Length: 339
Length: 296
Image (cartoon, rainbow over all chains, first blue to last red; front, side, top):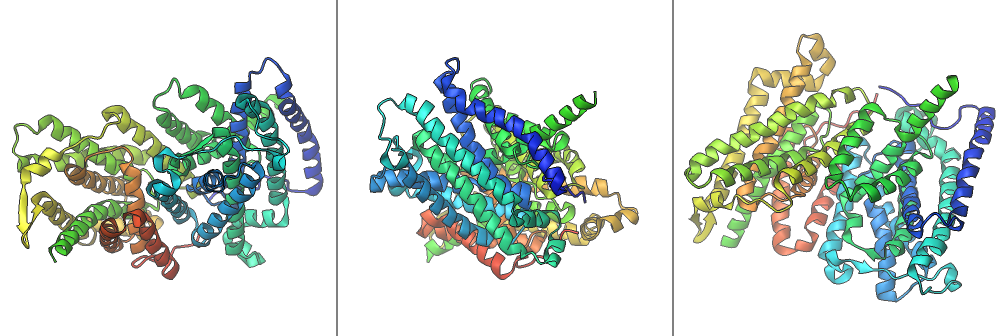
């Protein structure tokens, strides 16, 4: 059995050096992201698309807490994304609340609750059992969303109008396009930065190291004194909450919530993003999510059989490029440096 | 009373089909330690192939002959697809299971779209075959004769499979490979060929399941994943890797599903998963399964 090395540093001083090297590309990316609305050549549509990408990035990053760091592959993350999105929709429909902060808090709470329940069942198992159990449980929610149509609107879904931001400081704007392309873009960017930082803190914390130890060798981790099942459960809940956060952000951007976000292909897309970018690296899922969003936006128009394309690419990735885009990029960079 | 009998027969009908799917899934897992996420799609493929053949041939040939000829043909075709898929999985046997799941998930996506490409998004029906058999009267109420045939077919297949696994030389090879692949290889068993055969046999059963169900309910996109999940529930209840478990699990799933559809259709799936969850909590390896081995 091949064992992977942890994607994080081995020695403290090495880590500092690597982080300094890493901060340059990070600064460049951050500057571009912040300055984007000021560049007139970039049309608003591009920023909305990028907002989609960032949101899916949060979802994929949360998902990767399980796959990349804990070693559990979930085919059921649509459950958390969809629960949070539906929670936002319910707030609008039944409580007539239109505050983004309410969406976020309620979405996180609801997806966290679902993750607590699902996690309690799922983390008793690993590997195959875990993967399909997560899939099965998520499909229960999908079935409920469709069948309890008097609550959820069935396959028609629920409309989510533009919310107010920052506890009502920013009221509902008149022009939705400008709102989504500028104000909401910055809002999502800020939440994105916070979420990435939070996940970064989690994976570098003692808890993060412990779950990586569980991933690499469960038995040894247990001997060292790591409470394996409890930590897996905590990782599951955290993962669900971050994916739920993405769902709450997504609901007003899309403007409409349908059972599709609870259906298994949606989970498959999250899995795909993480694997495409490279689930063995921290930034891999982020890269994968943004690239995937653009690919999908531009390829769906041309490729009727988009799902088959995804299937073929996934098979290719598993067989030939298991480290994903980030891994391949690092490999190319290393070759280039060597000359 | 007669409603109960009819419902019981319906439950057995589902059980027969679920056993074929779950049995194949379990067999493949037992021998190769792989859960094929594309297994449900292979069942759907069987259904599509059958419906397509029935659609092009049904006019002249009498129904029983048609059924007898086409069901094994559909199964064999799916088995052939399985024989193509298995070599693609070979590089993954030594790698972490995440990769196997990702790979078979890729196959699932590919197969679903392949069926959409070949037969279009509208459902295919083979209902003429079902109607040709007509009804039979049971306790005063009419019941489709074809459905009874499927139940009998399921029983025959279960017996046959049991005989293959426990009473033939091939069965001995299967069980030996399943218990200890390295030892089996050291003793001169061609493990690679056992793998291909086991995988194809599992796919054959999935194809048969699709072929026998399609005259009753037609072939639709998405039936594969639904079947995968239900078969997995059956296998989890019974114990992954055990044929007896698959049979018992399939009967339980069939019964619960029928009762749920009759009395509380909204909660059908939820109740099935609840049962699976309870079994997993009480007996983690399922009713008939061996305790899950830890990763070395």
